[in-house]
Image (cartoon, rainbow, N blue to C red; front, top):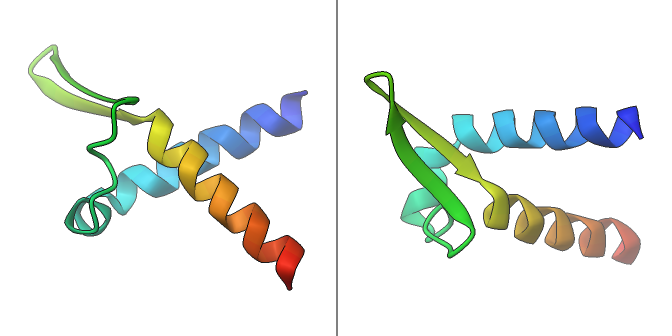
Length: 64
């Protein structure tokens, strides 16, 4: 269970770092992606993009 939490956390950090590039591709604006301001900072939680990318990557890994 803790492994999955670590994987999801790392995926969120990775996608957050790549968010400018991914936004040009249309990711980051899906219905399950959250963007809000809190304490003078903009926060971005890409839940739907993470699920979509993990699904695509799992299909790719199974195919290879």
